Amino acid sequence: MESMADHWWWRPGWRVGRSFWTWHVTFAAQPGVQALVDAYAPCFDGLGGLDPVPVEWLHLTMQGLGFTDEVEHTDVDAIVLAARRRFAEVAPFAVTVGPAGLDPETVHLPVRPAEPLIETRSVLRSAINDVWDHVPERADGWRPHVTLAYSNVSGPAEPIADRLAAHGAHIAEVTVSALSLIELNRDHRQYEWTDVATVGLTGSRSDMATE
Image (tube, rainbow, N blue to C red; front, side):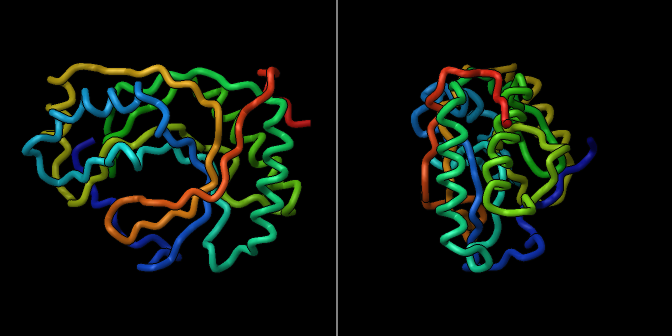
C-alpha cells in the first residue's frame, strides 16, 4: 500500500447531526484491549495525519440497522428482544486482537479467529430477520477488526508503516460476552455513541446454531 486516504469524507446518507443504529462489540470492561492501545500509543507520537481512537470509543463493528430517522423504535425494540432470545443459548468466546496493520484509511487490529465472530454476526442477522424480511448490509465480505486510528489526510503510508514495523507486534486476549446496540454519530471526526441496549451471550452452547 503506497498511500493513505482521508477517512472522514461524508459517506452517503451521513451528515452533521444524523445518527445511526448499529451493533458493536465494545471494550469498556476489557483491560487487555486498553493495555494494547497503550502499547501502540508511542507509534502516534509526533506523527501527523492520524486521529487515534480514545479508549472509550474503541469498538468492533458488527451489524448496522439504519439511520435513526428511518427506523421505527418499535422495530428496534423487537430486534433487541429477538437477539436476547437467540443469544441466550450462545456461550462467550475468546479471541485475539492485534497486531496492528494498515489499510488505506486506518491503523487497525485484526481479530482472530474470525470464525466465531462471523458466526455471531450470523446469529445477529437471524435475529434481525425475525423482525424484518430484509437484513441490511451484506452477509459476506465482513472482516472483524478494531480500529486504533483513522487517517485524516491523503498522504504516503510509508511513515506509518515504518513506525509500526519498528515498534513490534502486540496482541491482547479478549472475551466476547455481550453485544451492544448503540446510537452512533460521527459529528466530531470520531465515532461516538449512546448505548441503547446490551445483549449478553449467556448460554453454554458454542456451536452458534441459528436454527
